[in-house]
Length: 250
Image 1 (cartoon, one colour):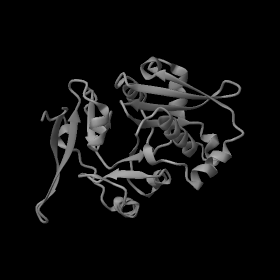
Image 2 (tube, rainbow, N blue to C red):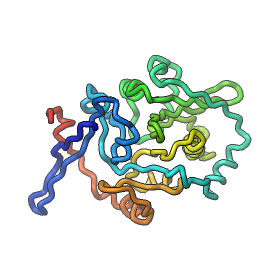
Image 3 (cartoon, helix red, strand yellow):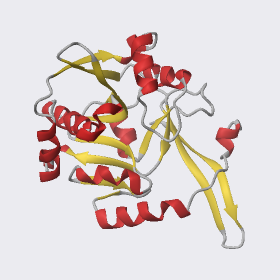
Image 4 (cartoon, rainbow, N blue to C red):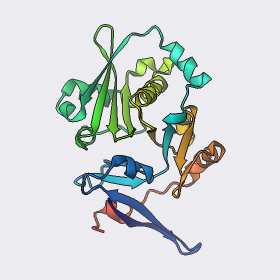
């Protein structure tokens, strides 16, 4: 079993609300599938970067591959990319940690609110031997996307994607996620983890059905409840650090 521990966060004595964040540390090569199943995702944050094999509990999302079939929206996105010939190659992620061309592509095509530092991308690539890089090249040999994926025994985690932003009008990012879901199903996996879902901007993940999310206690398929949570997220943000991120040993 991984080491599971809590770290004190914020509190409100007025409402008798006392917050703790929950972490897991993989000590002896425990099953990634089992850790993800408990609502944890891989942690490579900028705080406590010396910690390896760390996970944090979050509103994780996953697709039940045993029941997955492409929706009409999925098929519509697939049709938009039908004329684009792409070669897909899989590599061990650690082999890319010193690949400057791949690193430059990823760092310049990272679609997020904040840029990813090169040092963190290296940590992601070196995080575990189960980490893979999936490269997408066009017919002329130009890279168009890199996906970082972590493989368990019967499930995978879609950790990061980096893709040519000029293809955004073709819903290329949505197509890539669909392609990885279908590839995981073809490998015989039963779950595909899509990462966290916070805020309305992340609700595109609900287009991959059947989607489940971690409530903190169980996996739920109540998409109406998930959408309500996402719409309220902007009002429940706090910038404080928990004690673990402040450097306190717990």
